[in-house]
Amino acid sequence: MKFFRRDEWALPAKKYVFTNDEINKIEAEIYRQLNATSVSYWTTRIAILIALQTGMRPQEIQGLKWSNLVDDGRYKVFRINNSWNEKEKQFNGHLKSRPKGEFRLTLPLPEPLLQLLEKFKHCQNSFLFEHDMANKSDLIMLNIKDYRLCALGYPIVQHSMNDMLKELCDKIGINSKDCNISMYTCRHTVATKLGNTPGMSYPWAANRMGHTVKMFMKTYVHVDEDRNVEMSDLIMNDN
Image 1 (cartoon, rainbow, N blue to C red):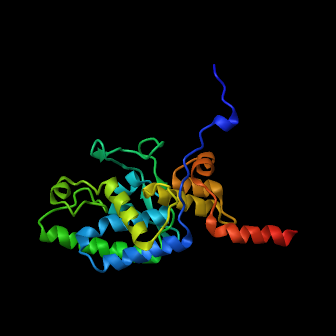
Image 2: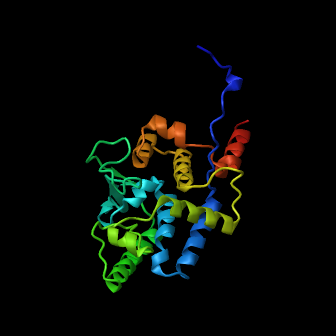
Image 3: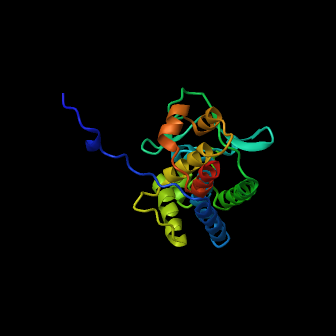
């Protein structure tokens, strides 16, 4: 058996984390584009907004249903127990690493996103009615851009979400420093913001993200660039 020195280990791939300013710019650009495009082009952009707020996995976002939007105390959240299998083109019947039937709640949804979802639901229904189609699976992410896929009841595909996110980042001038940008960038960003929030309950945060606390901290929580100055000031003020 061969043992490797520590300096021979391969470094894990760096994960890019959006700053608060970049998140605000992405969201602002999405809302600007929504006002300038037809509803059939809204779905991927709304998927990105949901990812930036909840950190949900892309397959979970694909499988979202309108009935998943529920009350959680004073807030609205998604109550999910399913995800979409893009390869098999069907629901998985469960969440990742969860038994069939077990559900979890997501992070709370902000009011602007809730208002947008309400508007989108109305527009989606009108679009389907005008084209004599139905949303038999109650999907939020139903692929209304492609009539054939819409008729089959399929959601938007992951590469469309990834491509749109990269396009938005290019549009507003985000430099990812050679790190790959994908929908999982949103997940890493949300987890990092949670992990760096003072007073945050890590068990609560991990549960809302669909992970154990160990995996949540090890895999998804990174250094938050937005807190660099704040943490440096904290150290200097203690000296």
